Amino acid sequence: MTFRDGLIAGRSHIAFLVGLLLSTALIVRIEQWERDPTHLYAEIPYSSQIPERQPAPLTAEDKAAAAIAWTYLTAHTRAATGLVDPAAGNRAATLWNVGSQILGTLAAERLDLVTATDAEARIDRVLAALSRVPLFDGALPSRFLDTETLQPVTHDGRPTEREDLGWSAVDLGRLLNALDLWGRAHPRQAPAIAHLLAGWRLDAAVADRALRASIMNGSGKPEFHQEGRLGYGQYAAKGFQLFGFDLAQATDLRPTLGWVEVDGVEVPVDRRAMGAGTRTHTLSEPWMFDGLEYGFDRTSRELAWRTFLAQERRFEHSGQLTGAGEGPLDRAPWFAQATVQANGKPWRTLDDADREAAALRTVATKAAFGWDALFATDYAARLRAALTDRADATQGWYAGFYEVDGTTNKVLTLETNALVLEAMAARRDGPLRPAVLFGRRAETS
Image: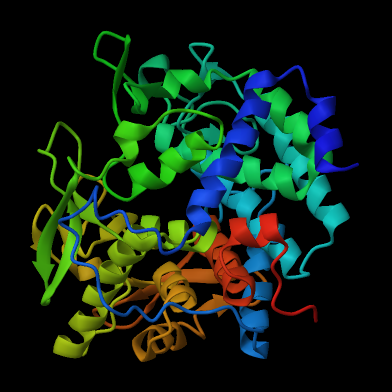
């Protein structure tokens, strides 16, 4: 069945089809690598040269790294649902995690780690599971779901009461990106994707051309607030744009973008005033995902480069390898963000409650593989080389290692291993979306 046939089979879902058509225009825009947006972002000091990595055949080491990453997804898939646990032994998944599972599977298929038939069978089960997930107020899935039971849970996996529920538009944006791209790579499943999304109120996550999340207030009633700080907000908005939503407010950098000097580099920061529960942290992840999946435009390339370059400069000034990222820890407080800057202060490490956790700062495997796939510098290669033995060959890549003593952060996560798969696919074929849409492949063996 062709992609067109798949769309015709799902023709009752007009919004989905219109979104797919509109996404073509978005991809054309994304493909215009050197489009100059200075009329919008005149304050961005563009670099004269950025050593962006070009696609090339994978080495034996690259292929081995991808194979290890794929073992995480195969070893931690729930038999009852087909969903992959976000971390070994942790069943509390987000829609972001499900998007990572889909994109990681697509990358693994392109790398010949799984056949197209087996990959489709895996995602058939994921789509079936998502169709059974309860919807918060009949609109959208809640923030966390149990990968075994599909019921809403808290972030640590406990059964949840209504006051804990709500949805994340940022997480949904990543899932929409994954579903759209999967449907294009596997048109047989496009009608199933259309049917799934027709049952969700995607419009509930958009207001005033910005992303909107829901939370429960103290009275047990839903409240809504803008979601998506600099980086994550623009990345997630692209997922909604693929389905025809106007997210002009979310993607406009003019009211958002500021600069903080970190180790001599002006790095991007969200300059909006801090609100209740909001953060203005600069991290690696949103820029890496944007580059690995959509491909950079001139502005996103610059913001990503500056975020990476500050980490390289810290190493040059201190001798400390730096791979900024967020994720679980193998010891209390169990989660930390190793930032480039947080609220104007460089190199802060914060737990989930924004408390200082400097002794638990890690070098993230995600950052090492992601940056090395995007920028061809000696430091990026050195950073990745420092992680080469931080894996279990049958379970996947560990999350990283602690700066203070070099011990491994022995947490196995979906996010780490899915990103390694995406990074290896991008090293070979370029960003995932253009590679799928335009049939790019640097090697066949």
